[in-house]
Image (cartoon, rainbow, N blue to C red; front, side):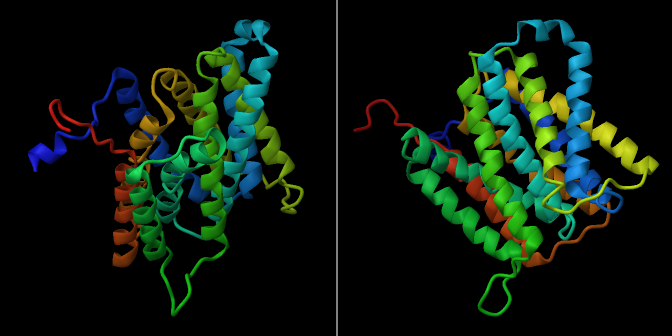
Length: 297
């Protein structure tokens, strides 16, 4: 067994270790967002959340904005659109599904990264990537709770699953822009675009500005700060961490979300827990790399 494990490469650098801590924070935000949906519509909340993050970063980094380039605006806009779609759909889904279930479905974006790289960057996924996709999909079926001969996919599950495509695109776009942009400037731009897109999506969703409540205010401000820290750290760390390596670390997100959700009283059925475990296994398997030892043919 030890000989088999030694064939796989799962070492962590300093940047990857920081991403582990960020993932813990990220996982803990699911429950807060889920509760916020009782006092706000999804897109308004996402808009306020990222507007807070953008304004906070702009206030402490306003001098660096003077050097903003067209490349940074373009990169920030594309990443911001992906963030707005990803978080918007994910938050929309949390109106009807638990935070734990949302987190596990969201983890599906990980095996999607190599597939999207194949589609857009002509980098075909390896055997382990395909195995990871198969495992994650099987886990998704269990997590969704099949009823009869069909999957019990409601609007919440479908919206959350759709959000994984945008989140996968975000990871790839961040990786593609590394070394070409200033981290602080591009982060401010992407947060601003994510906020703007979320506010615009209120229109087709027929969403109104909610009444003021202290919980909504503190949730939006707190998650805004968390979003700023998460995005800056992701942009900084992924200058030296590849998109596929980063996804291994992000696999811990649903685990932390599940722990927080369970402490708060959420209880997933046994089949759903098995499905979540299979998704996590698919995430890790898709990123494992077999390496040949010297002397092997």
